[in-house]
Image 1 (cartoon, rainbow over the protein chains, first blue to last red):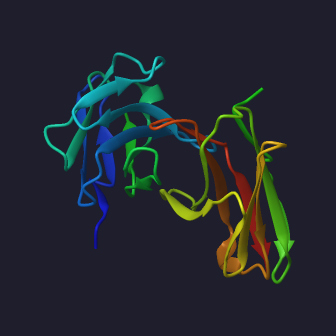
Image 2 (cartoon, chains in turn blue, green):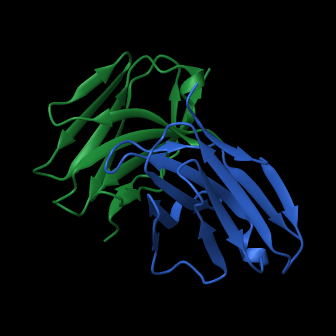
Length: 111
Length: 109
């Protein structure tokens, strides 16, 4: 089945230790998104790629970076995680303007 | 005013009840609309897109009112398994999807 995959589902990192989250898709969608969701809040868009074009949201901290080496893969790098970065991170894909499909999410814990 | 507003609930309803949620949006140029369901600690899953003429999928009916800038979701014959958070999502352009904070539904036995 075509899908959006995020591994691992849970990750624990230490305060200040870089961490990379990965996302892959078999839907061949040209747009990929990274969202951060904290408890009882709406998903918050961090950035998106349209093909190779990177678009950062204005309020996304510099601590968050992203890479998209090809259509199928997208990575979220948190350079120096703080306690406030503990959240669920959701990857989503879509064709431009069409329905978004989400991966299962990765729950990050920062110690 | 928030771009997309939902009543957070929770809506506590007995099994078999009919329940309706509304969602208002501020941008009259919004182009497409969706309802997602999110279970605790899981990802949002598409429940249904919302079409201008309204649409139905089994026990679920979605309506769009562009003049008043709201969309609605009606759930008939509620099941215990319908308990979840329902997210309203509005697309304002090619890449811009605005999420509501969600409405929590608890269906009680």
